[in-house]
Length: 194
Image (cartoon, rainbow, N blue to C red):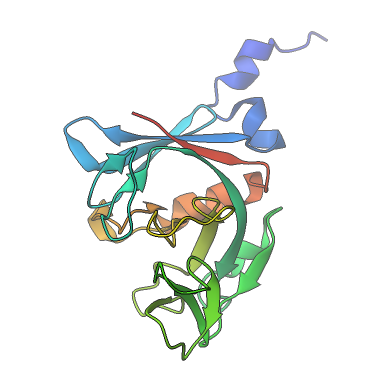
């Protein structure tokens, strides 16, 4: 009996990195449209949505830009009633309840942190009617150290139909997220490049 050649096993597009987990996801803008992108995971490429401000090396709060950066995936949130598949991952995933928010006020002591709502300062509600955060991964942009006004709530989450722009996040379809989640860990880095 002869063994198959390693190159034949890699031809299916998955490759070894997708069987053992992903260390890097590379994101770049789609040529001709700075608000839509391509996410490379091993040998596979998926469409994604980027921020309405495109990719920026000078990210600021409210500019709608996706940061030009290498960001580690820290953990995530999920709606168990909508995206139960989020449990199949190496990441720490916490359920989203009706009182979960994310502070977006630069002068607040909880800027760019989860908060319990109702909350006095402006915040984003994590349990969304549009289901964008049914599976939502927290990227380490402006987490430690936190710098006032450098951007908050930079997530890897689910996209709207047609990959319409985000507020600065990277977003993929629910099918893509379900395919990637089992391959991600807190060692996975998302590199947004030009």
